[in-house]
Image (cartoon, rainbow, N blue to C red):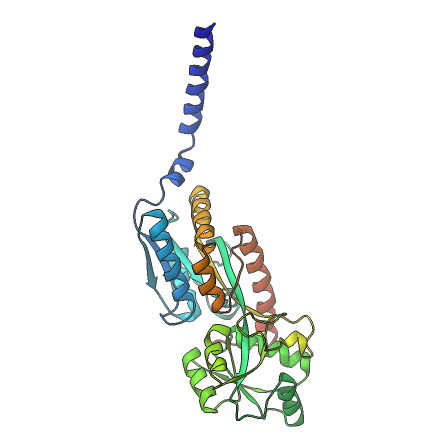
Length: 327
């Protein structure tokens, strides 16, 4: 009897081994990574995407015992570095960290890759509202003051953003249409120049990420009159949202996500996703990111894909209907 049981277990074991041998992709996923992994940031250092990628690279270096190297490939609102990853080998050794421009670029710019077909979603890291801020010497205490001034004298108020077609530009386009007023857009080449002009009073309003503007608001050098989410920001709890100031339900959020080249094996993506979840659940990293004003999403790949489709549809319509062109 014991011999029969032993023989049966041997047969079962051989069958299991044969089944595992027929799954090379799964084995490849288990063995990943066995060489350095490249994190492409399609923006220069100093913004918000670069530090997020570097923070995660450090965590994954520690947890996986392999190098995760951040490489900046800036240009064309993030599309140059993103194209590099879209055209890279789908082997799990190249990923791109994108910003909200990722959903606007397909409508705004000539693209060398297909945003929907050439990239595989990994994770929506998080979202954050933008802030609308002004110099304390300006007469605007609330966003209602802005709309009142603009209605009394059209195009008497100016607002700066990081460029034509940026999320700040598109957001203010929608707000003007909804509120029935007109203000002048001043596009800048980045958050630094825009903020400097706002600090100097050369532009009436600055529209930028909470992470960029919050330090100046806390220091008293700027006054925030609104945030663009449908709720208040944790880093600016005293600043009312636009939805509280005459734009019910309105929300426009900056966001950060990770993509891989399309065709990257699912076991690799699953393992990478699990490691990202583990890293983003560590209290020190969560605190760092929430202090920047980010609402962590730590989403599934499927949730990121749905989010991206909705964002492309929403902002693409704004670009087309208002004939917005890139700088």
